[in-house]
Length: 183
Image (cartoon, rainbow, N blue to C red; front, top):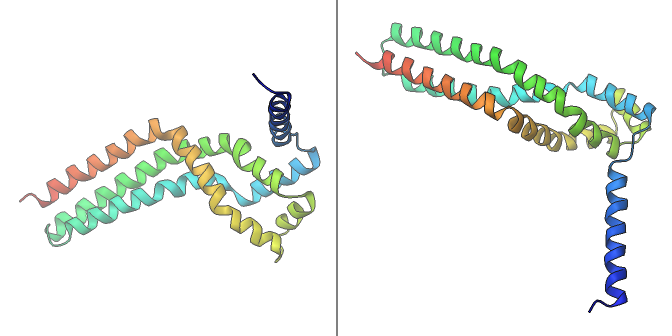
């Protein structure tokens, strides 16, 4: 049997949860939203997806270069590296619009709410002006969280398209390496 205290506690927790959910979803005033939009335009976070891709592609090229050193004749090594670098550049050219589109789609739902929630209009104005202030430090401290949040979203959103392309790039590099080191 439930006591009146238990029922009131449950109702209170439910009310608190509803209030909290409503507070998180509160509409942002137009003037503040305009400031958030300006911060996003100046900061340009849609490059995060491209930056995420650059690391594994650069690693693949570096591994190829290391594997070829001392194992392939200079002419074969140079030709293979030219092909590998070309494949990597083509991969980046193909994948960058995909990640940029994903970031553009996710930024309003991920990064903009963080900025609107954690900054006042005055702080956003200071951020836009790029003043030396505690606000700049606060923003820079948030960068890893925002990059991680957006990066995880872009990765999840583009995984089905990007992973097969990345695997294809690695296979092409592997084939090219085998051809270069085979006498």
